[in-house]
Image 1 (tube, rainbow, N blue to C red):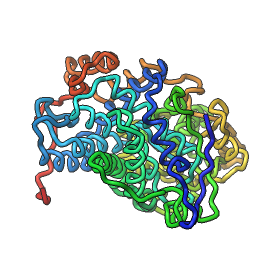
Image 2 (image 1 turned 180 degrees about the vertical axis):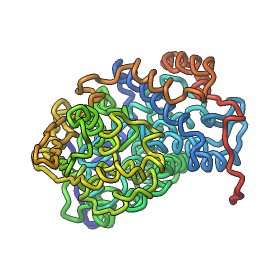
Image 3 (image 1 turned 30 degrees about the horizontal axis):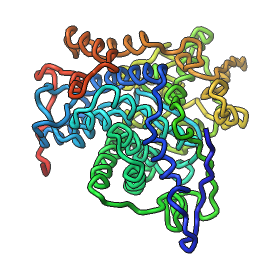
Length: 500
């Protein structure tokens, strides 16, 4: 790996493109490096993971709406849409829009946390849709996905967006563009322009994850993927982009991030070096913000140590800066304590999540979020007794550069009415790669079978699982087989009229 210094240059100083971050990203995207065996297997795991959560969300309102929009953009030799018959094809950018929304809706797929946040699995829907429309092979798709993960993970390590209240999809646009470039075997110059265009068009604020969180949280990454597809299309036709997009005097860094005195350190592999960043990412066992995964495990374990929950006086959670300020009481969002809050808000409230997991000794992607569940009096009592605190020790562990030591956990102190304190802590989720029981292929398959039960016919479920595990051998034009069909009578419609 090479750590690149990224800073702002005044316009009077010419910064050669080969010294720009976008060019360095484009170089590794176009280097045709050898694919790592473990990375290939992890890509397959993540395609299964994405399919699990996408099928489970097909009849949720944002996904229905995104599908209705995509259905208006049919194309004879286009891409497939989750749930819809394979013989029906659509413009790849609209298929990516619908499939990306389905993947993101439940907040239940993979994650990588470092200087910023990310869900790298968001790269897969746009790459798969373009691969289908352009008749690419399984190996082409693998190369694109491995590259996209590499770029997004390393941008997340090097550049913090949330500090400036910029949404994390700003790292997704460039990673999708890089992945598409690798998959389509584009030259370095073309990918360089696409990376810049994709960043320029995918800057938005974190209000989408603040206060009363709306359905836009599900749409945001799909929107970034769609914009990246369009950016690649434009530059393939010879168009350029604002440049240098990272280092320029009025660039993203200069005007939106750390400013003209900024210095970011972004690691990237050397040209030709094997890309393995996907192996540093991790998926979710529970349908909630990743920083709550270890706390759900912790709540389940604490349940047996607190036989009478009515005796709880208060609960203090000592955790990292990110957890406290994003999903804890440090966010200063009253909605995170409101039983009438949206599902999207509740899955970003560690107070709610911990209260429910402690009461139920479990977590369910639907039952744990129902209106009745959120309004249960006993839950509200525990929920409102919880306060989070930043602990510098946990913040330091959160940012540890060693993946084996990086921690997303907390220490919990439950104080009972009689003054007794019950204390437990956990560094990372049990399902984390370095947790008590890391997710393996069978865990991904079990997650798929659980989330798609009563939605998919058994034959279709078996067909998909067999196909995806044979991804390396899929020939050009066979990637449509990665779509999953659902009986038409099981797909809900939104018949409200739009523009299309």
